[in-house]
Length: 163
Image (cartoon, rainbow, N blue to C red):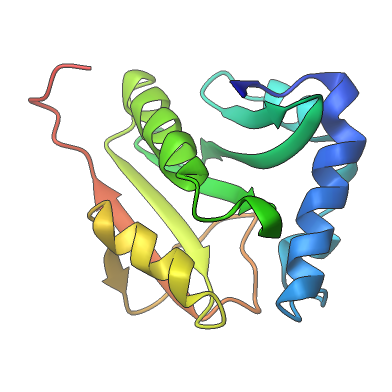
């Protein structure tokens, strides 16, 4: 199993994985990542930003999980498109991705990391709470907001911790 940054060759597999999981949870609708214009070329999207990154977990040549972050502002990143293939859940892959994403976002100088999710994904919400994300009453303004999401959370990094 390999955790690495996304490469151009991964675009199709990652888009398929994300759409497959969104369909699984009846989230293949407007206002979700399913219809994000950048979904079919995530490498180009994340390469547009100095302070962004997207990672995949590959096992036997297959992409089985992915996730990343991009800026909302100079101080706040957004956790984006964190998904684990159904058959691979429960193996600690979301933990591997979260640890990598949070470390990288903090190393790029972000003070906080924000996310949008839905009550249809209670396991994801549980993971986010474990990592210290706190609920917000409303979404943060950002160009990539998803109107179908009904949970907004944020985590403040402890800037005293060594990376």
